[in-house]
Structures are given as C-alpha cells and as structure tokens.
Length: 296
Image 1 (cartoon, one colour):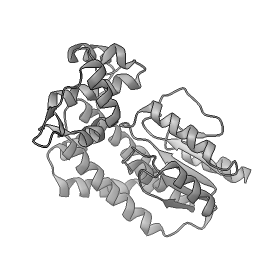
Image 2 (cartoon, helix red, strand yellow):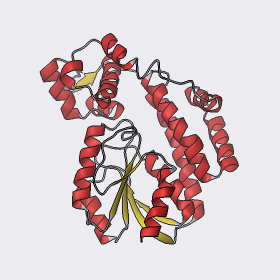
Image 3 (cartoon, rainbow, N blue to C red):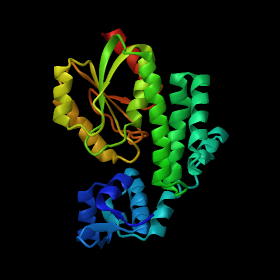
C-alpha cells in the first residue's frame, strides 16, 4: 500500500480527518509527508498503527494514553482480547476468504449464489454473510487482505443481495421503514442485510443510501409518514460517534416514529439509549418486527 491522502485514511480507519489533525498537533502522531500541493500523505506503516488505535479506542482506551505509544505496545494491548482470542474461521468461511484474497471473482460469485439458493435469503444473510463479513473484517485488520479485496467482497455481496431483494417486489405490509447511515458512515452493506432479512416478511423498506444528514433523515421520515427509521454502523465507525448520532437522531424524530440501530460498531456495547431499539444480532430483527406488529 502506497501513501494515502487524508480522506482515504479516514475511510480506511474510521478516524475522522479532524481527529487526525488534532493528534498530529497534540501527540506528534501521525506524521504525514506532504505532496507537491502541500496535501497530507500517510505512509502505510502509519495507517497500520492508526488501525490499531481505532480498535483500542473502541475498547475504551483514551487517546492520550495510546496515540504516542509504539506500535508494538499497541499490539500487546490488543493481544488479550484480540490475537489470543481469535477463533479459527469455519472451513466454509475460510474457503470464501481465500477466493477473495486470490481475486477469483467468478468463482466467488458462483459460490455465493449456490449458498443463497441452498439457504434462502434470510438464512443466507444471517448464517453466511454476517459471519463472513466479520471474518473479512478481521482479515483486513490483521493485514491478511487489503482494501481492494475487501471492496471485491462487498461488491459481490451487495449485488447479490440487491438482485434477490428486487425479485421479491415491493412489500405491502407494515411497517414502512426508512433506512440510511449517518454522516461519516459510507458502508451500506449493513443496510442491505437488514432489508434482506425484512423484505421476505413483506416489510416496505426505503433506503436513502449512505451518509444522510440528521435533519434530512428526520424530515424524510416525517414527510414520508414512516413507522421506523433504521440506521446501521459498520465496524469502521467509531462507537462513541455512533451513540452520539443515535441520540441526536432520536431527539430529532417524532415520538411516533421508532428508531432501530445496529451494526458491528455497536456490537457488544453495554450502553443503551432510551426509546431506541438496539439490534444486537440480525436474527433479532425478526423479533423486533414481531413486537412492533403486535404493538401496532
């Protein structure tokens, strides 16, 4: 990986550009070089350290205690919960990751399609796509695959899910759900996974795509008379920022519109927000749907 511009580092690590600049001034890390136009470029080894920092921040460490530390020390902090606790991937998952790593695109697409036909859409998402996504994320964090390979995987899965959802037609049953991600969250695979779980139940799902401003989400929810707003957060999104955004969105929405939030950034977090349905696992969506229909 060559040196990356600041926008690419933000996408790669989930650390906002403003935070990177503050750390540079306050902790003398990162230390980007400058291109001919004076723009920051971050060497590969610094990006790798930033990935470690992001994971440690999500575990509750404070920037002041870790940003200036050497990479080896950061890796040691992660080891108890990460390296030693990492379970071997299921053989089927490992085989798919190998296809991703080797860029065997046609074989990957065919294998995913076979699993979809065998399992059906909902089980395909919950039993294969969800654990495969986690394993892909782990492989990326450990440097076993690169950004290009992660994008290859994401593109294939998204295309397959879109095609499968489209074949079901428009849902005709309540609730009507407005789906999006908050500013700074560009990953939409989680939204497609949610829609793929709910579409077979006849739910009307409308997606605004990624990175919709909070005020626009609230306005669209009101104008469209939606029953529920659903937002998703990938593992690359800082958990603290996610919770802050959820709280702000809840305040902006009418009480009559429910708010569902889930995704890897929230997984395992104990914090709970009043009047927000936090979805821990994909299968919990169906329970939440059942509860909503009983109450409404």
